[in-house]
Length: 382
Image (tube, rainbow, N blue to C red; front, side):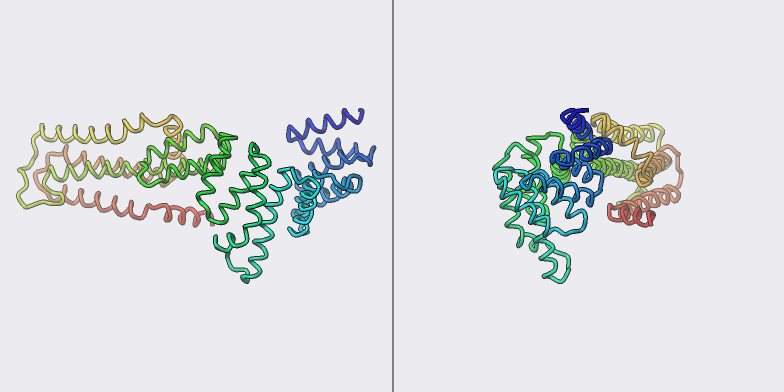
């Protein structure tokens, strides 16, 4: 195989992310032609992708021995220095050399911004005695990294990576306005970018006043563009659970209505209507309950995106809290039907059924909050 053919095949394997095969091919290449700096550089890339920083350091060392101003080798060497434990200071020095050689290459500035921020944060942490840093602490040392990231953006406004680095810095400094601006810029270039899409959708879904159904639709729509986003899947589960949790309010409305019809609910003034209720009245009450469920749950469910409807079924299979919410809504609705369909002649039993159903559901809903559910799941994992 000729030199050109070997390198072309290696590049093809790299583009397919078949790094192990590419590494084998490139190792044979540098053994046969140890003066091939390009082969050493690509071999270093394979080592880095396969989690072998020491081998990547060796390969970049050979590439830089042959071509001291090989910027690609310098960038790979910076990554390998951090991965091998040599420290971020050495990586920053290497990246500054890359910037000196190619000051108009956005990749040098982008990576330097990332590593310079890490260096500044580590130094700040030592100055503060190792305590947890606040957004203000990071903001105080992030000016240099911000300037580098913005230089990368100016040099390559159509590349995604500089915006990602600037967004990362904004996240550490608590700059929500910049995060939003970077998300918009990233999505302009890559509408399926998982992190930016998840961030924007999360903000829209969690805006005060946004209903659970609308939030679920927003997240499902975003998942259609980035189906591999695990964070958005979690957000969709959370929004779907809010939908299921809301069905208990429909059930409580039914049971309260049934209790008022019998004169055993809250606000009983001591002069309830005569019992038993007429058959016509009981059937009318059932019809009103059916209307509550049709308008409050069934119609809303049918209007949701297909992804949301599928996730409702999936969540009921996967999550015990979701089954608890749906099961309790069904149980309370059954209690309401029992209250109105049975021709009660006394009020003691229906009053007891009503208060047990009401108080137990309200207590469960009080306990059933996101923080409590997460603590329960954490305890189970332990």
